[in-house]
Image 1 (spheres, protein in one colour):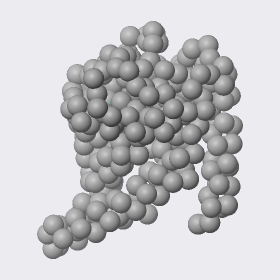
Image 2 (image 1 turned 90 degrees about the vertical axis):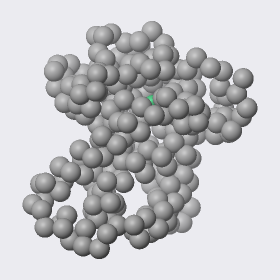
Image 3 (image 1 turned 120 degrees about the vertical axis):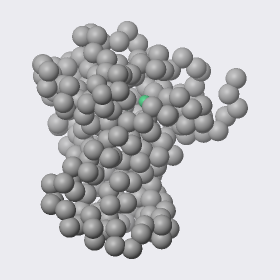
Image 4 (image 1 turned 45 degrees about the vertical axis):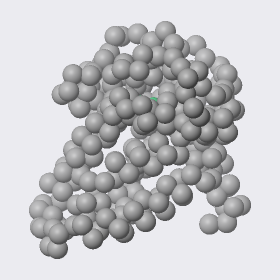
Amino acid sequence: MTIALSMLSTGISFLVLVLIFRPLERCFPAKEQAFFRPAWLTDLAFMLGQYLFWTGMVFATLAFLGNHLTAFIPDGFHAAVREQPWWAQALEVIVLSDVLIYWGHRLQHRIGFLWRFHAVHHSAEHLDWLAAHREHPLDTLYTVGLINLPAFLLGFPLETLAGLVAFRGLWAIYIHSNVNLPLGPLRMLIGAPELHHWHHDRARDAGNYANLSPLMDLLFGTYRHPGHEPEAFGVKEPMAHSYPGLLLDPFRKKR
Ligand SMILES: [Zn+2]
Ligand SMILES: [Zn+2]
């Protein structure tokens, strides 16, 4: 894709996201917050970096790794998977992927080396649809790799899962948005911004690690819904503030 074309598609994605999320944030705000809140430009830089450069790099790296992983899959395994009814295959992919990413995410909060990269996402002190894009590219590689690993191992090519990947992407943006919809108990099944906002509480072990459905948090005892917004978002340790600074932050010697 030419640079002009990818810039055009990035511009269109930005407009579509504004058109979807801005009215929601105006009508059902979780907190009083201006559109151009502090660090807006930093998060915009993360979005542009992701759309114009990093996402392509991440998928190229995963395709490369995938080609090498294929050698370890026993002959006939994919054929056996495909003999099952379609709904069983779909269920396996979604459940395995949710279990894997739930524990993968908990490890990011537990292991210092993984936290260095994941802390970039948590350094956001203002949450909205744009802050969802604040993610270190190596964190994206880890997360997208884990989410898609079961589908890959079971023999589903990435392209057939494009719909699910796109839906997950949009949902990830939604749960960061400055929105509080009156969903009631439905939030336990499909997730909600007020749950993920608590995940962004300054306490590193605040809970709500699930990616799509909070069922994993309910199952493993990390579901948290105090019924109000956290006082402050962010991390306790000192971190860089600029886009280049945050990209380099995981490699800095930590005090
Ligand atoms: Zn996290
Ligand atoms: Zn988040």
